Amino acid sequence: MTDKENKETNNIKDKQDVKDKQEKQEAQNKNNKPKKDKEPKKLNLRFFFLGIIIFLFILSIFSPGAIESSKFKQINFSQLLAMVNSKQVKDISINNVSMSAQGKLADGTMFQTNIINYPGLLESLQSSGAQISIKNADNGIMVQVLIQLLPFLIIIGIWFFIFRQAQGVNNQAMSFGKSRAKPWKKEGNERKITFKDAGGIKEAVEELEEIVDFLKKPEKYINIGAKIPRGVLLMGPPGTGKTLLAKAIAGEADVAFFSLSASEFVEMFVGVGASRVRDLFAQAKKSQPAIVFIDEIDAVGRHRGAGFGGGHDEREQTLNQLLVELDGFDDKSSVIVIAATNRPDILDKALLRPGRFDRQIVIDAPDIVGRKEILEIHKRKKKIAPSVDLEVIARRTPGFSGADLANVINEAALLSARRNRKTVGMKELEEAIDRLIAGPQKKSKIMEESERKTIAYHELGHAIVAKSLVATDPVHKISILPRGMALGYTLQLPEKDKFLRSETDLKNDITILMGGRAAEKVFLNDITTGASNDIKRATKLAHDIICKYGMSPLGNRAFGKDQENVFLGRDFGDHAKDYSEQTATEIDNELNKVLDDCFKVALDIIKNNKTKLEKIADVLLKKEVLEGNEFEALLNKK
Image 1: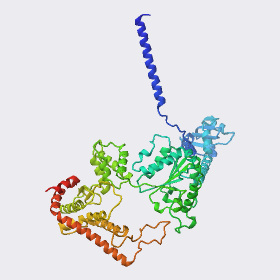
Image 2: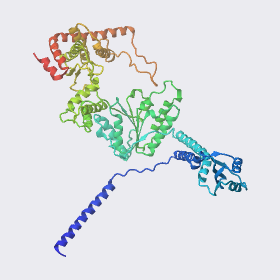
Image 3: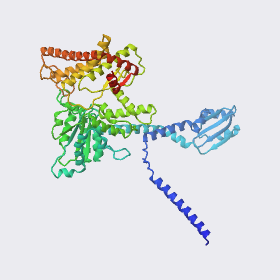
Image 4: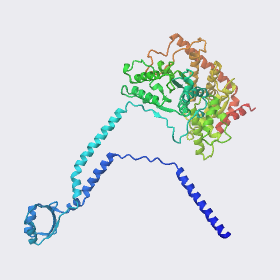
């Protein structure tokens, strides 16, 4: 074999190898494709029988015999004989199987009749000259049989339908007392939630990591004689991450997780809730180690003994059964009950005693460090511009919960998309915070120039007073653009979170609130309704100073009880007023004194800065929004 032939042979082999590799790769890719779950379709027998009945009905209507029978005139056998004798029959077709006959008269009329076994019929027909054809089979015999069976099939179908309905009701009745807990699905493409997704609640996470470790390694605790808490109660305001923490525990521990709301226990039928509690804990014990998460437990865990419903109250029976199940765990049981509520004050004491929900974790609104962590977590799924300073956003959002911060990020992303931006910038985040605090900007609201001027003086009154007082939060923004219910607003940005407020701080807040009304008094020599919300908030603060915090000459005493809505489990004997009429008069006088003193301080500050305020008001009317640094520059300008 020559070199040329060898080269050609090698080229052919190389091409063949490449082709084989491609075929193998394609086959492998096909095998790697996610296979769709081919679930066998359940045949619904009701629709099957209904389809058969409809089919037979249509068949009976459109069968050849039915269509043809509408063309023929029905006559009896004696009329046929008379027509044969008078030689009116032109042609006739006789069916010996169905004993029927069809034919045509001399005048063209088509007829149909049933015949009997009459011996002289054929001879009479032949003698009359009629054309005769005889059939010994019936092609439509099956159709006629089906038509005869149609009523019986309809009756059978109706009985079958009634039987199936009764069976379904019976199944529902049997499952009425079953738990409606939703088990956690481990499989699927959904990303597992872990403690890394919970920011700003470091202390709570540390407490719950012990629970996760016990679920993973229960022997470690059992061997040393330690008992893990059977119940963990997560308490805190709405949106602080209680449900998120429960999901994170399930994701970290990777155990059976039963989740439901406490309201799903309660029904109008007595005993159903208790039955569902028993079934829920039975399922959890079969799947242990397991977690049972009950959200909004105050729906069934409120105080008992209010006199409503007696001992047969459905909610009360459900709570009793829940208490029994919490006590029923043995020492080696690895079932943890986690509950969440934002109303721990109304829970029954028996529910909170040691041995039941003996570990209570408070999840409060995050501080500035926690808010920044939460913003970093929500930042992962959004395209945030590199110039965004999340620390400034965290400082601007004191008191915001994790849900509020997530809403800020999402609202900013919506604003960016609306403006055809590719990333979320600082401007969108700032506007998103303003939208959540004061509402969306009302661009369609057109005000008179005199009203705009009044609003400008009012808002600058707040700002000037805030700047003049000692140890107050710096002014971050002043706006006279209407947002929500407000015609304008002055925003102060705290430099750090405060957990204690002094009497001076509270009175400074009242004085700042009075700054708007004081500016109206100085510049307009009149007052408007624009300060109504300021007056309301200032009165509430002054009332708290006197009656709640004991910061008044009336002494170190709290006056009155917290007035709460009446609900099941509370005593009707609680009254808001626990002081005499003379003391009430003294409280009123002291309240007026605090408000008047703060207003006088604000009034003096406005008068001393009247010229500066007028000049800054002219700039604010032109720009409509002043940032904090712009306000500082104008205020310090000579």
